Length: 260
Ligand SMILES: NC(=O)c1ccc[n+]([C@@H]2O[C@H](COP(=O)([O-])OP(=O)(O)OC[C@H]3O[C@@H](n4cnc5c(N)ncnc54)[C@H](OP(=O)(O)O)[C@@H]3O)[C@@H](O)[C@H]2O)c1
Image 1 (tube, protein in one colour):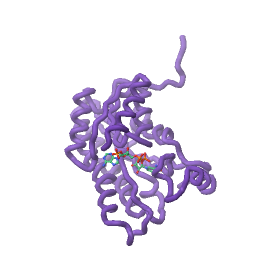
Image 2 (spheres, rainbow, N blue to C red):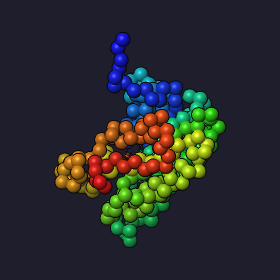
Image 3 (tube, rainbow, N blue to C red):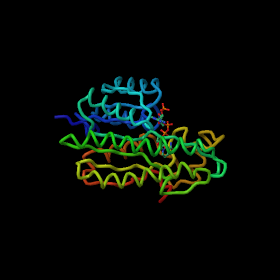
Image 4 (cartoon, rainbow, N blue to C red):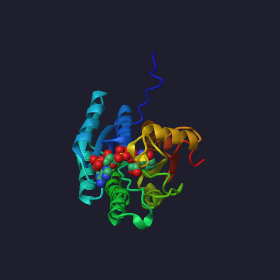
């Protein structure tokens, strides 16, 4: 008998919806879920990057569907959940990863539009997605699991020039805990992952190259490097899986030891 020791299939026969899955962390989460057997619906505003994620998943033998949606619009997130259920029959896992960072300026100089857009996408987007996802999951005998992507910039650390973004991510952490309490009785586990700096363009400071960022990480992070998107995905999959059946309302930090 041969055993594929490293091949885990925690999500076989489950369907996952990942927002912001056309790039970066969201794409890595979608690929990881598919690699462990999930049917994956990838959502975001731009079609082409979503189609690329679907192609990658299908190329690896998985099943995926792209749905364009702006998470700041209730009708769009409701339609994404409906499309998920229409296409694959259920919504078992949802990952609310879509987010934007508009920083660099101190509070007094931040354009008001940057405040509103970050609130609309990072906070209202997670709230609306939670509503649509929970309303579906609580109709299912097996319930579901939801993971929201917050950030160490929220409740865990402070950085100049990022107050508005930090406020939105703190809101995601707090919203996660409250929603977890509200809906564990519905059979739905809700948790958050708070990444520190991750290897996507979002963690580059203005004018900084990837090499500069690596130097900064070597000098400032206990691990000596920033996190990979796969490392963040691994934390998300843990919380979304049956490995975490008694983990409710936690906020798992994945930050190379930055807040240790
Ligand atoms: N990178 C880091 O160092 C880091 C650290 C901590 C937390 N995070 C968080 O991790 C998440 C992913 O970040 P990332 O680094 O992977 O950045 P990214 O590559 O820019 O990914 C963000 C994704 O969100 C989507 N998105 C943005 N606004 C949206 C909207 N209104 N509706 C639907 N989708 C939307 C984008 O696609 P469209 O533009 O096509 O919609 C994009 O695919 C974010 O929530 C971010 O705040 C990142």
